[in-house]
Image (cartoon, rainbow, N blue to C red; front, side, top):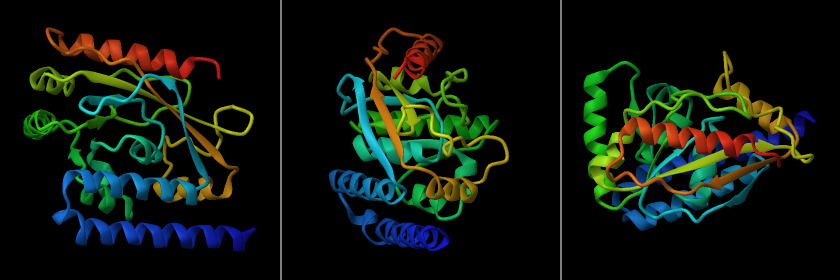
Length: 245
């Protein structure tokens, strides 16, 4: 068992190093479509190495140009979404300090936000609007932290204003991680004092995971208020994650 775990860990570490090299040597010179293709392929391989199978679970087609908002369960969330629909991500500043993953996220163009920093939030907001207006898809986790599976924390409304100003729809995504019996997977929870390393070891040691991603009906931002959009997205995602499998 220890040998098997060690082998899985070595393969993941090698893959992470490949990702770092790609971010440093290729991404600065790559076109946006190439970056998206590389991100999708790398994310899919990472998930396979972690024995995570991604499943598109109903819903509607993903929009090419939208502000994507999703419930936040695990550090895996970014890679599950990128394995199907690559996005530019907005994430909390703490992720930047994660071993390797923080460097990868930064190299892939993730925008980091420090909690409670209003000045930085205004700067990030302006950048989000510009990226959305260029036709890119941007994703964020409006709960602001990871939560337990089966429920959704309140969605913070501030960054929903970017969709309104850019004139793009908001598309909610619902994420769930299940075991072979369709129950919430016991190795996925990423709350409290759990570290990235703790979580990685639990996933590599635990049974295989199925990540279910549902793209939900988009919400029109034109004429809407950010709080209305946030509440509508929260209710849509909440209904989807509570839905029986």
